[in-house]
Image (cartoon, rainbow, N blue to C red; front, side, top):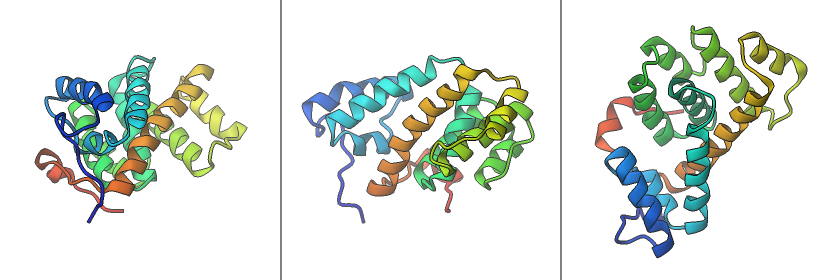
Length: 182
């Protein structure tokens, strides 16, 4: 059982409340993991700024969800795997590709496979990518600047995944169908 509170707008520290309101508007609810993050206005503020930047970058939402789901699996964050499974399917990722990522395998789609491989490798190698890792990404049609954009998505994931591992927030009912265990 977690010792961390899942905050609501009313229970959150004052400086966390605007972020929770924004997430409420974006998703129609406050994800439990954000309620946990709200304990720290510094953390949730940094997270929302990075989250906004990532979603305003060059990747499509389907590509971003490929990255976020891969990161959640690689970091073994059950809450984030379930959440990003739902969002990936909503964004049109093939169910077989989502299932492959959840199993730690490459999706069949070539660009999604390259995204998944690069982010997984970056996490596992702690950023020590070699020429082979990066050239495979380029061969799939991506650019140099997008290597760093993958790292920005990984940074956002790291915040979420680590908070999930530390706080163990309950999985919302709508994501139960996508529950996952490492």
